[in-house]
Length: 145
Image (cartoon, rainbow, N blue to C red; front, side, top):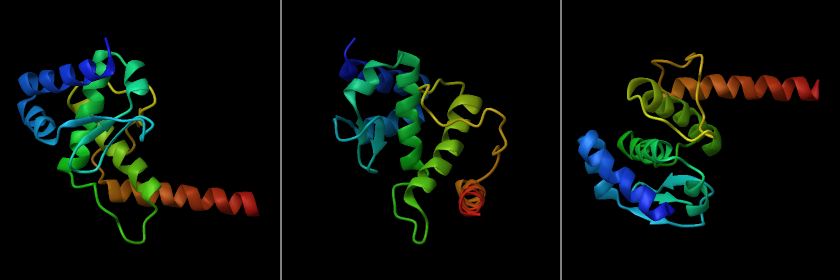
């Protein structure tokens, strides 16, 4: 099955099985592009790389679409002044994927960031960001000292 059909089926399945997320996915729409390595959102559309989606199962594609919808719902599509954008996204992904996998029972791509020990359970992305920032700082200190 091609990537476009797989994503379309995921959006339809969300609409029927988890209507709130399906409605959000339908209102965002999807764009197939090689400009992103996996999936992403700009807050207006869900972007996905067809080569990446081709490697996913249908349940993982569903999880990917739901993940991107959650970035929009939780207003993650903005610049956070004074914060590392990549580290912000990692922290957000930890929180989103915890919800997608453990609370909603969906699958995510194998490459997805997931806290299997659930150390970040019930935390905000800002709390996770501070923890990751501390770890990153300690690693830099160890490397330089």
